[in-house]
Length: 244
Ligand code: NAD
Image (cartoon, rainbow, N blue to C red; front, side):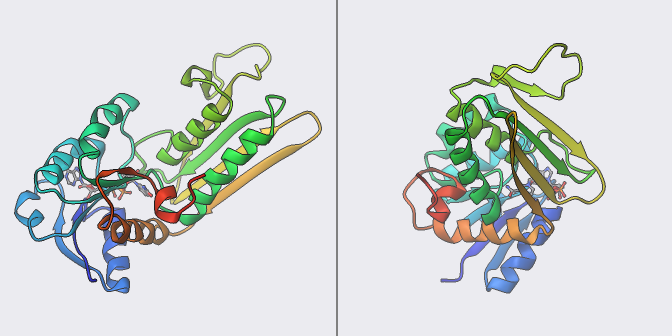
């Protein structure tokens, strides 16, 4: 089946990558929408919505998707935890894939990080480093936020354990903390390194994205999958069958 897609954020870096990948896969961008455009006229004829825009655009787009009962793939990142909590009940009324990262490699990294955090006890200090291009607006990245959630859950810690940078912190590192460090510069598409460091050994799990096409292809794979699902909020682990 050739899907017709409403693409929100169509003129952005990801929007352009989705358009190119859709062409390669024989999928159709039925409506290309960006800031200043009204998505309402194009929504009736589309099979699925893909959103790579800005967090402020998500509430109105979700309300429109619910009104027209259209499945949606949300790739936009940078929502606060409170914003996401408020939006999830709305998203759950339609089939929705909401993922901070659509790359297959990163989703395997999520899986491996969960395993490592489970097997390696609190003697292994967990730290995360991420680097992205100079234009990125949110920090830490959505992918880093997901990796941190996974580590916190496995270690039964809350977000109070997170240390964003170390400025101002004195004294030794506590085993009940998780460090996160965001680097920004140049045209880096997305690097993530998860470190588990003990006395005597260190495990590093590294993923480097070099082309946005991986996210675009993943989002299109999610779009093809979500049109056949019942209402609910899914992530890329569901799409790829990687759920434990
Ligand atoms: P970008 O700034 O290049 O593009 C964003 C586009 O959204 C722009 O064209 C902008 O005009 C448009 N826009 C702004 N407000 C809008 C609105 N109200 N309605 C419609 N369009 C609007 O950014 P980008 O690099 O393409 O990234 C877009 C989003 O996707 C960011 O949140 C980024 O972090 C995220 N992202 C997610 C993944 C993933 O795999 N989930 C991968 C890469 C980027």
